[in-house]
Image (tube, rainbow, N blue to C red; front, side):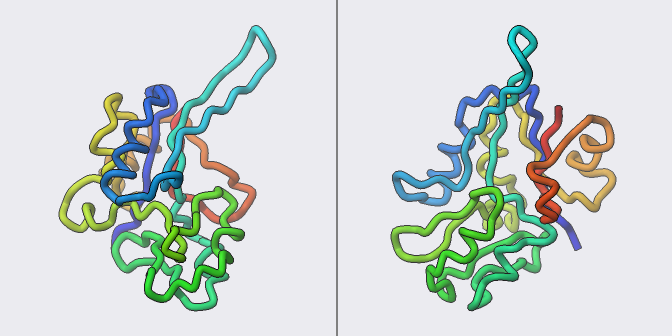
Length: 179
């Protein structure tokens, strides 16, 4: 069984937000909400500064606190690729998953249910890339099976320095940032 993940090259990301627009369009995300966003991280002291631009979203964790805290099992791990999803019909909008996510990757949709990135599983199941990956003009985003040593994501992780967000949270995120 596949274990889907994403690798984002922070050297190539220019923060253009094409991924954000593609996601909003593909998934009909309501105005004022986002399933993904661009973050900027500046480190160092002038004049020696380093800025990282990166696309952020749900990390589809191997140890997702949003799943274990959900009282209705609406938040769950999907059979395909281990993607973390929300069953909108089961969600009661209690916001437990929103509070438990250390990445701030969930929001309550105006229709009353928790919403988030799905890795565009509806596209992936058709053999397509997630919308954000498909439109990236700098080709900094890569999606695939982390357990397949021949996949693009596995080869990139084996060949480049990388990090995850908040590793100390113990969630084992599946979004990796190349440096």
